Length: 314
Figure (cartoon, rainbow, N blue to C red):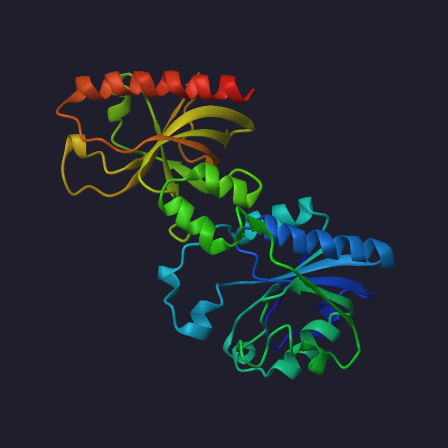
């Protein structure tokens, strides 16, 4: 898949030639609703024997349009994760559009001319609530006015789950509650976090449950505090584990939230390695113990429950 970054003003010479079907959206999470949009665009591209292009943005639109501070945004998927997911859905081209000042100030007609017609779109596919600027003047209902019959417009209806719209907002709420099962059902795959193995306090080793400490990008959303069943992609392996998101209050108050993972049947030194954490199930909430003995007993139960979980899903 070809990845093309577009920052206003961009040079048209970087654009590939030939018509495309263009799927539009921010696609945070690339959840089942987003997948339906991209799959509809893919079938349209096959029908016309053209390439499928997917357009996303380099930041959450609420930052420039609503004044939200960048540090206050927690993403479900990084651009790197979107890249992999778009490619798995059959995209040929990924456009990453920079939401710089010039683009934010651009009117809807100019945006359509440059970022739809200008990208050789013979058809545009988007969710029915997609906007390409201020909602009241740049929505899907008004798009035919700006399109001027130069491309086909395909609106994809919301996909529902349990009679509610599948949305990034619902997934965030599920993660904030630690409801991994719900989040994964809405995503259509296991929620992931990317991180790097860093040095910790090595307390787990003394307890008989050595852990890796994972530093996750601050803009990625972590599930709620608790103990979880996970699979970790590390040095080319998929390793079962039990993850703890919490403050280790058994060993003191006022500690920062950390992500520690006890990898089962794995003992290699992996400091500095990049990992992908796949979240499967929440075992329990965090508990403050009076001392190490109670914690060790609980960890033994957690390991047993983790192993049983994976036996069951096999």
